[in-house]
Image 1: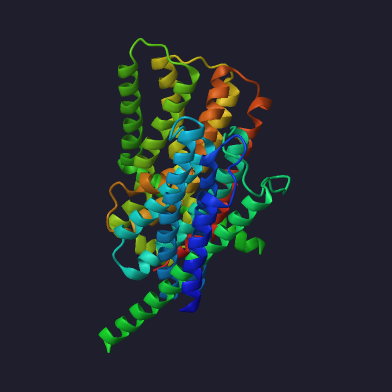
Image 2 (image 1 turned 60 degrees about the vertical axis):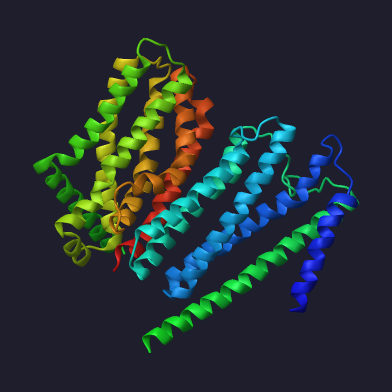
Length: 218
Length: 227
């Protein structure tokens, strides 16, 4: 309980600091403050998708239903965060590039990511039998995850992008001043904390579902 | 080990032979696949009419025709086993990986046949400039390898779903997008007449996409196939 209150205070401080403490980036102006939300949202989306994929592999290895539940739960959370990252990115794009959407390679890749998981949910709703659904959708989740390196590393190299350098770029250097970096890392930690909160809730829901099913049978 | 591999190849060849024999008796898959591709092509040709298109539009149209007709044509390969009830006999008698391999080669040959017929028709109706025919053939060849590898395992997944209708294109599009982007760009370069060296990046993407899809499909097919 205490860590949840601490997380609440932490996030409130991050939000206040992102507007009051950190200076705006040179050349971009006040719009640059969106980085304190956009990047952590994208990071949590990637984290949730990764956990989802790992659970899909685990399901195929063990055949235990809780792994499949976790796969779909994390896919849902990843989709919510990816949508938020897309929207914040589009707002940034409107203010700096002049249009909400212009099929920049980065926008293309997040769009395809959303499409993949939309297809994943479509597949899940098309199979009625529980175990079969788990098996087929796990295979699809792994297959779909394989296209991510093409979208993230290869396509943006072949076609040029306007997107600002990812924080960990090729040179491995951070291009922020100290105050920005402090707020940025604090925000990253805060959002990761929120993800773990959701993950915790998931575990409890899955346990309750299992218990409920057992009670129904017995 | 060597004899094991030999049995493996023999089984895959037997499944391929069976599929070809069934296909020659009805000619249903090939006919519907081909007619779908040709009607789309004629529709495109009608709507474009006398206007001159540039190479970008030509290459996009070629791959849109190929993608959607492949989705229609290749979805049948596993559904027909399910409908006739032969799927259980196949599950009992063959190693899962050989089923994938046999179906993959069968789908690939269907795709090749359609490409061999449709592309000359495309050139006939819409007269795109073909600057480098060799590169065009290479891009089509490598593109159809990846297309067949991915859609074979996806068709197996779809055949087990309760709603089979339009699921295959929905599942295949996001997975095939890297392949399609590279193939469309490679086709554009071929139409504009660039030499082979200029399209190296696209060819590498196509080859690696096929290699990854093929290997992982072989690894995962067991899970799709078992009941």
